[in-house]
Image (tube, rainbow, N blue to C red; front, side):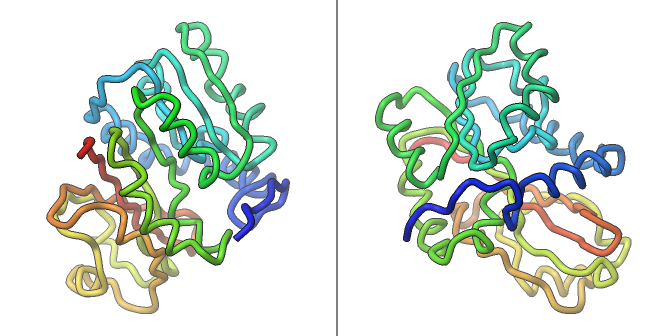
Length: 234
């Protein structure tokens, strides 16, 4: 399959997404805090971090990013770079962090970065759960990633399931830790009824592996469970 093209109005990004993210900045503060707490627990001990799909950095922690000497950002979105500079770039530069951008498809760009410099860690920034709306071969891409990344430290937070907000009891909207992947039985045990969209990301983390599940009320009607996990080199 050909790599999908950069666009200002993509199905999972672009100007509309940035506008919505900016408007909801205050509402999503709790999610950002939870992601920051999770990221600060990750200690990959490298100087270079590859950010896959960072967008404008809406969910990223500046405190976490400042721990690295170099950031390599891979993103299709043509406006991600200038918006990231507005949200994080100037402050990171003041702390001596260098940022290099690669505008394009990470499926093509990432392997060459890994082979050129293995002393890197990779962070997928809430991007892998959206591959299903961007490319028809998303299942093959997701299934191959653990092997591609086997020699590096990597981490990901991504959509695992999503549904209309009315399907989720208030008591179930709390972050939790688990050693097993979320599936339909997990949702039912929490009282989460109705029709849920599986984002195909259950293949990413190893079985019997620590995961953190973060609730995200994206809009007044859209609820997402994010799955977050870190993996060390094999």
